[in-house]
Length: 156
Image 1: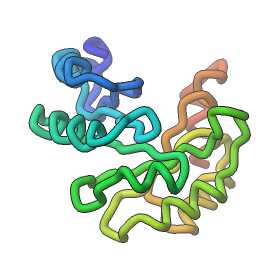
Image 2 (image 1 turned 30 degrees about the vertical axis):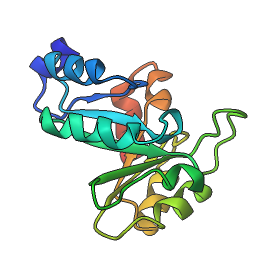
Image 3 (image 1 turned 60 degrees about the horizontal axis):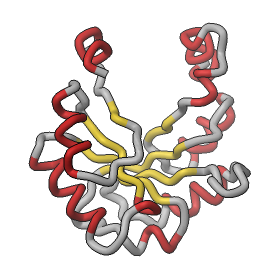
């Protein structure tokens, strides 16, 4: 992460299972600009506390949910960037439409990010047509022989 952050002016996201304040400090020390906080793996006030710690450290935060139950943990007055994982981590089934439905339950002022299972320009057009602001795409590009070419194709 430190090497990447030195080579680009683009924001660097630590996409990890963050459950401890130390990981937030570590992300900052290694050049991250933002961290992913996953509501599903947090208990009680942990999500809010981790979010607060990240913001105090100067990091942006992408808060990820999977379902409506996760959304109950989110203080939408506190967060700026909200994501929904389209992939059911138990079955690995992807449902972009379910993700869009959940994202559109978030307040209008929140930046909405669709995550996982996005592979085509049609997927991105669907998101745009439904008011979704951004997409987090990882696996699709990791499977490409030439990730740059894959990016150009999905953006065409």
